[in-house]
Image (tube, rainbow, N blue to C red; front, side, top):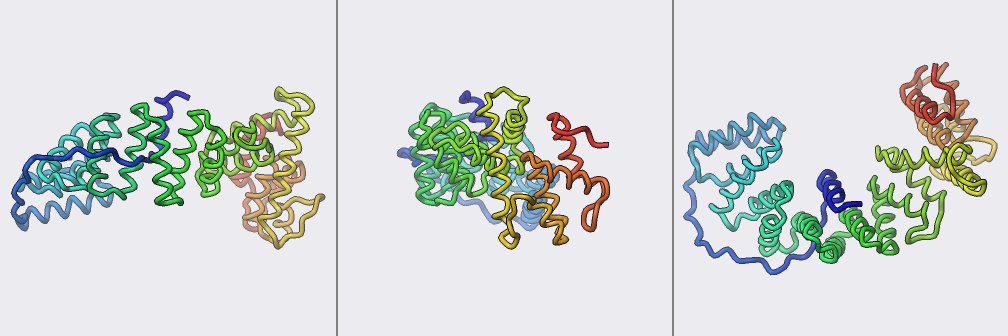
Length: 366
């Protein structure tokens, strides 16, 4: 995995995590005299811009904020809001210009400086971003979002150990930060410290982080930093796939091909894949403790008998995706006939059947 790819993933997912600040440089410029209170018309334009920004009407917000600044160029709050608006519009150069002007006007405005730092991170201007973040943390050492961003910057500058230390400090302050834990796990994995990375992936996965669930599954599948457990890998991949992680869906598809004898794999590997899917199907009973488990039944069928068709469809798709032929038969019947709560040709069932057909596991839907 290249560093460029890793950085792009973190930026796109918005889940950068950050380290403790090094000693911040001190701004020695003298403070600028406070601006006079805005006039009524300036205040009205500024408030209109704020309201439009909150509603996501970015172009109109920029127009209103520029009008406020035309009337009073030293209105720092309007300049910060305009910078944020331009950032949201994707005009990063203009956003940096506005935010730097705001910071020059009010060097102690932490919000303006943090907004500037975020924009510089988006532009991948790492040294400038680091300087701004260190100034933020010099003023507010417990500002976690600044620590997140500084962690990304340190990694981008080749300081992997610094990034690891940063993420761990964030987690010390707030152990519930799943994004921070996921980022820590990624950096540890890139450093080939699998024994440390896997527990962090699993912890983030348990907190519901979709990509962490994929990596947790990969770790269990390969025995990286944990005892190899293919059934655990299947369970994590199902959870990640249901949250839209395509790599998890691909991993399950490849394992199904092994299980049915179409993919590359020895007889022992085929048996292991079959067993992993069977164990996953068995664990689905634990999600419905009111049902009586039976080796001759499926969870989805049991739910159907109780008239819980909406829940049944979801579970039957899981079971069929885990190679249950009875669940597959129930889905085909529901697709053709429907029942209370499930229309015939239900789009969820259709999507499953198309996917199964693409893998060669059933005929295409009629």
